[in-house]
Length: 366
Image 1 (cartoon, rainbow, N blue to C red):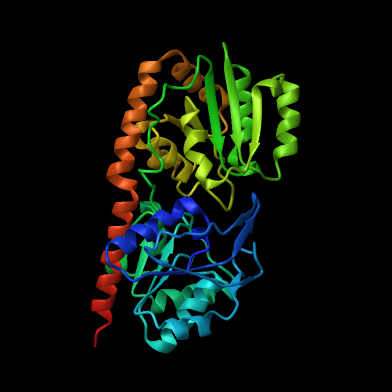
Image 2: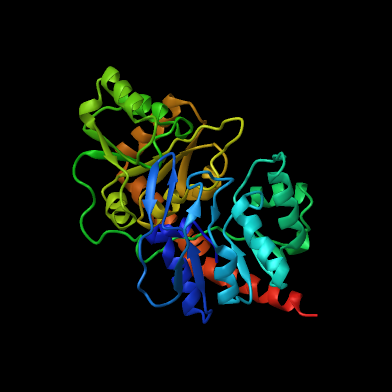
């Protein structure tokens, strides 16, 4: 399994679960990954359920062009029976894997989370075409992603919907302690970026009545602007900027909240692709409020409240409703936990991956 996402410790429960299903799994990850939110250094895993192979990368942070240094020689030594590419088909890292697999006649599977239809210029369109032509199966993170792949011509009989990582329902679980204190705590986790709609969240909170606090966990280019906005709205004293939290600290963060908000804004080239923070918060029985950008509303389902993106008044109305109704908060929290257990758990995702790999090996036999 080649995956830059698995530098994050909380995601590593997925390969652990795969290992417990009897798969001899090696995960190839870089020493770190940089993006607009900052740098995530690889969190070591000593579970013993899988092998962790750390391979240096070039062009760290360049999503489409990053690639592993000396990957082919590492795979030559490993000689895997199947290669899983936790990477979009149009990226150079995926092409690296497909090129090695095709030379050695090893079946390969890729996963996609791209929920917007796009045509890519060379060389990225070539990478995608090669990946489509060779890979035995494609895994779509959501139904919308599946529709994009079908529109691009990927055969339906080799396509399956499986969430990319799943959520660890043991790590992310309800608190046994008392609920958050008397005040109403609103939270957000993720990048402090323009497309995340945090200016809308600040506007919405500024109109809330009573005792409330807003906590923003994350980092990014918009932080300075958001601090200025909070000061101008007169709510800087009620707004905490926590910075980017380690994955091990996220369960405690969610449990400290009365509600998690994901106020994403669609752009010409991006919509919310899933909203993993939603399933993590839901697993902790924290109610969620989401904009209708991309997949957020489908991830939350009946366990969340949805409002039209950019509409601060509608968001404020949902927050005020939850602030005034603890029973509704508990009901949504229970519904969220059930939804994650049934659809987004690490166990169910691991089973889906292993079943696909087994089918790929059968399909590859002469």
